[in-house]
Image: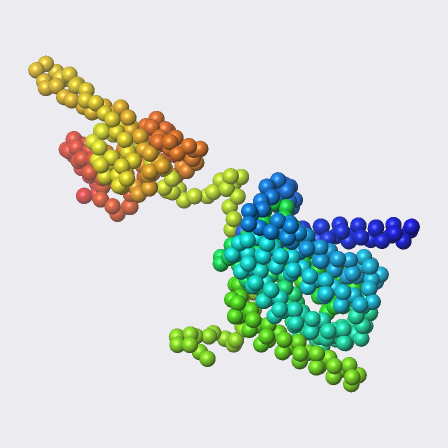
Length: 316
Length: 188
């Protein structure tokens, strides 16, 4: 009984974090992007520098009519947002932010999280296919081709750190992590982060939702809360990627002045800022540039890193 | 492979970091947003916001209405006869302005009416807050146009080396002619 209660409590905490952290990132994006463009961003909602803008957005989305196109596959159309969002929640349950601080620690946590994160794309594919809209299908196809290209360097980079630490568990990886790994695993970390951005459709890898070309890709026909769920999924994905990168490559809760879950959040916060920074600074990559970056840069770098890691691990 | 006419500054990929630097430095500077409804904008004093009418100067000559490229000025007038000032004199007739209206939904703020007015009856005013909820309410009559005269800045001072305005010159000549025998001008 107490086990059940504890599990429920842990899930509850992760759920609250899952709902609030993406909003924090979203608000940060509003303000950072605005100031990088010499604007001020939202200023009215909530009174103080528009802190409640995303809450206001949520209220607005919930009031909108949920429209389903006549030709759409209604069941798939309705399921897609849930399928896009839920994997990120499930993945977040398994990520520890401090020693013993996780929804549920798994022995093969890295494997579990990477596998579950890959499922989220199916939600987008379902949305694109079920919308009965040419832009949606084009977006979904672009999404899948992008996933095919970037899942490989993403996983290869993760494998490198797993080899270095000799474990698939997050806690073991963080315990084995040494500061000099920052240099040793730097290429893997960069590849992991960039490939993760591409999987999340974040600019400059937002070709699947390129609004100037295909309206909003797979989400074109979505309105109201369903659309809000897709947006939430994108920002939950950012939170997840930043936590994952900081736990795997930046030493998680290791840090000067004692180990603390605050370090994990600080590192993830800096990474979230970088995600926004990249979005503001770079234009969207074309389809061929996307594929070129994945197959000619990221995958070779990831493979070379894998070789280097293997050599160092064997020689040590 | 460098295409014809393509010039690369610096090494390959340097632009990526330059771009990041530009966005970061912009973020640290103050944003240029003006909080307009909360804070009034600081406009140049001779901003061209709206066209004001000095009704007393208007002779209903219709020049502005005819020069207006989109015909947004409406003028109605009638003639009144002024009786002769003295016995045996001639009666004079005068135009009296009944209606002067500008349709600001058509006006394109070219200012030709102001330039063409020979009697200085039209002026640029920096006032700009006169929006309406209905486009039909954008036609403003002479009463409203007259109210904006209060916001018109005074004309700029003459250049120190400029020729004296004709009306002042005439007055001065007369005054000098009257006073010259008694007190000659000291600087001549």
